[in-house]
Every structure is written in structure tokens, then in C-alpha cells.
Length: 313
Image 1 (cartoon, rainbow, N blue to C red):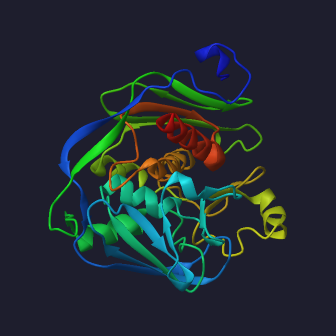
Image 2 (image 1 turned 180 degrees about the horizontal axis):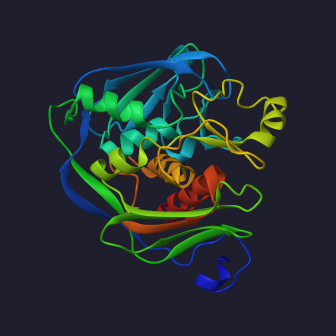
């Protein structure tokens, strides 16, 4: 599917209009009721790390605390280009592979959260999904966040008022105005028949996310593993934290949790990347119908950065 068939055939990365607003959600900003602590291996570094999540004040938003106490807000301002993951960087200090954790926090409605990473610079990959994050958040519980004066804050959400899109070649993301949070995602691996072309579409709320999205795992193509490892990537990757598919032999460590698990995982990633649009404890994912095809982290982040730039104009 080509973007020109949908929005008209321009040839550069661009958006159509410049209208974004903010809408009250009718909810108060939330934070964790107790600490969350999970440990595991970093997907790309292979280092053993621990992520500790703490309650934060209303209006603080979500932010990481890395080496030496460096504070890195989980916002698009600090997103940098990186391969096969989403990375935040401030003052030369970075934290990698933040997308699954941020996806769970955004979908579960944890608006304000302090995240400390111990043992390295990468969020642990766990089983390659957001399942364990969602379970840990549910176990800790949530409560209304208060600011330093003890006051709560109303939670706002961005609203896409006019169609917007970005694309590169036949990869694209479109945001259409909608009264709900909805995502439609397509992937296409013609040289890997077991994956092939897949689409999945769902409205986004905490319940749907936990039942249909959170447990979908990262995936990779077996024939590409050696090349990625030689490039210094996926040093901690294994069949314990990813589903692996061969172009010749199909899935090597099934069964899948869903017949279209790879496509669902792309939605998980997109929610995590779009969470970077959040500001001051407000929601990141906009009221819109997002349609994405063969997009990936780089295009997700480019789209969110473009939205942020529109707000600054």
C-alpha cells in the first residue's frame, strides 16, 4: 500500500496541516501507589540491569534517572537516533530501549513516574513484551498524583484536529481526527512467508492493551541475527526474550501468543514511542486514529517530533 493512494502523492516527509489542541480527559493525573522493581538483561548491551519505578509528583511527568543522578525526561526533546530501539539522551548520558516500559506506563495511565536504572544504561528487556510491566504496575496499584502543595492536576490529552502524516518510500504514519484512541498497523515481510503481510486494529485503553497488546513479544529474522550482532546489537537477545522466524523454516521458538503477534508488537512499540509526546504529566497518545504501515521506531519518533514542532509554532 502506498501513501500516495491515501493522501495524494507528495514526495517528502511532511504533514498536511498545523492544528493540534489539548482536551480535558475528565481524569486526574495518576502515579504509582508503591515502588515497582524488575531486573533482567538489556537486549542490545547484554548487561544485567534493574529498573526501579517510584511515585512522582503531579506535573513531573515520566523521567529516567541514570548514572550520577542525571535526570532525563521521557519526552521527544531527548529522543536520539538509534538502531532497533528508542533511546533518550541528555548531557551525554543515555538510556536505551525505553519503548516497552513507556508503552506500559502510557497505556496503564501512569502519568508521573521516576524511573531509576541500575547496572547499565538499558531498560531490561524481560520477555520481550510489556506483559511483566503491566502486571507489576497492577500489583503496585495507582493513585492520584499531587504536586508539592498537595494539589491534584487535571489530565489533558492532545487532539489531532486535521489529518497529518509522514512517510518514507512505502512506509508511513497517518493521524486522522477521532473521538477515540485507535491504532491500525500493518507490516509486510514478503521474503519471510511465516510473517508475510499482517494488519491489526484496536481501540486503545488499559483493558484492551493488557489483553491484546501487552504480551506480544519482540521478533527478529533468523537470517539477520549474525549481521546485527556483528554491528553490536542484540547482545542480550535470545529465544527467552524474542520470537525468531526463519525465512526458510518459519518460527523457531513457537507457539505464538497470537497469530499476528509481530503486528501487535508494533502497536506496543508505537504506543511507547508516542508516549514521548507527553508533557508535564499529561497524556502522550493523541485523540486520533493512527494508521501505520512498515513504520518502526525511527518513523514513530520523527512523527512525534513533527507534532511537537507544530505546537511550538
